[in-house]
Length: 238
Image (cartoon, rainbow, N blue to C red):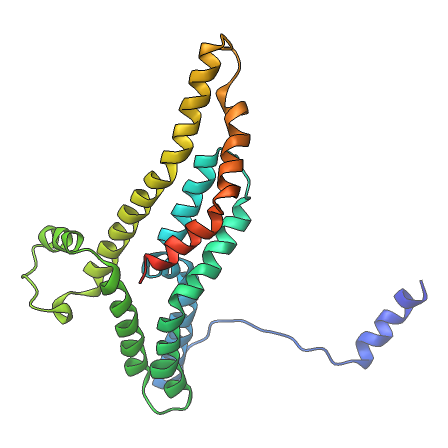
């Protein structure tokens, strides 16, 4: 109660910072340029999650880990937060050479005022394009080129980023589903065996998933499943 009584006096004695946001007429080109730069930064921050999904290893990793959970039939185990968190950390691990290159060739030189914003942006895009070209499949690139009816590119420099990004995503989805199919096979075999045994014993009213789930978990633990899945994912980007 005493603290509540002292609050008005403290408010007058202590100077608190305040933040004011507003819109006013620009007095010169410099203010317009600054406002546009702030707007550009806010736009980049708002679409950062989409950039992470589209141009990095996140898509393949999160889909494969989701297939692992679905194949085992453990419902929400591991939870979505664990799947997303592990996917993010594995993405940073896989993309660390690319991020280091961006830091050395774009971010640090720009922070030290050695290069302009345009050069820093071009260097960053070049590093990301190099990674995407290492993973994209030619038929996916050709599909996008045929759809846009652009000229046949002579080399990588002739392929625009607007074509490379969707082609890269299609390649990631294709490879992720191929890996998911391979993950499903051993668990599907266990489900079929358990269902056949239950049917031969006349226990048709008992759901096979109840019996097969412990065996699938046992198989996954015995073969060190997370080690195999994560190892295969990391090696697939090599």
